[in-house]
Image (cartoon, rainbow, N blue to C red; front, side, top):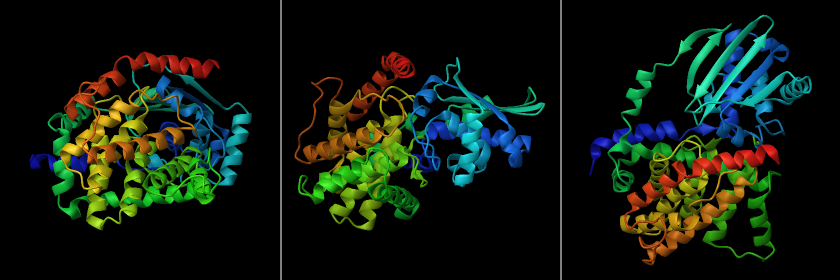
Length: 431
């Protein structure tokens, strides 16, 4: 076992699995605005500013139709505006945690006054947002790139006062443990690490379960989770493991994508990916009455496997991230069912054979459908794997080896699907 990687795995998980309130793409715009407002020192007069935001095509795609927490509205203009009025620049992905109804009224008036504009930037960065806030004769521009909270530049009155050190970033990336790791190493860590060292992953269960309950009891999005529950109660759906996984996972996404004021525990910069890596495992653990240690190890296996798979791919792409995160859940579910590494590998390969190629056409309430579809496939693939059944290396892009299957999937996401991404955005902005 490569135990020298274990501390690095913990560092990666603590960096990639963090609380996030709202969809992380518009939240990054809100954060940039909040930082600019702080630099200008005009928080008490934020309603008087004008805002110009320029974002990458991928960020535009994921910000057009998603709910902004606490506002009852969707879109990047509201994200930028509410970030100015009520954003907490110190709260990172929870920047909008203090939004009030009065703040929303002010923000809506600013939008009505045409004080905010959002456009697409001609940049190569997949994740990019530059927000410039104007107040009287002054201006501050904040640029976030390559990570949802990664501030790379700040300009005050046209003069650059902060520029991220590219060498520091390069050195940080050089410590990426996945350059030396395989899926077997991820499994070994999750199964053998000291329980107290990984207990922190329980927070993902707590946060995403609360979000799921919010989705089941509130009026959010397409109400997919609530629809499963209603039809189970009236007899059209039976109870059981699959129904529990679908209902509880979809409900968390329902709430999150429609702007619920509860944070999700994210994974790889996405709340939906965090939900997809958490709730199927939580529902399975509770259904099987797994003990505390089994639940913790299953959650760590799921989240770290999801991060491992995502490490091969661009941060944002035309490939739905919930599908790859659910491959982590398939691993966690298979473990809870008594599966070994060979069976866990089989479940991931079957996932790739089933749902590879589900497109990301922006963040919006219907993402909960893709989240629930991916969760259902995780259960199906895990049950097949326990019975010794899998999609084999003779079929499609799947290889006999799980790591090669992951690489093949990622080649699809990073290659030809980049053109798919352009086509998706073109359709979205012109329909």
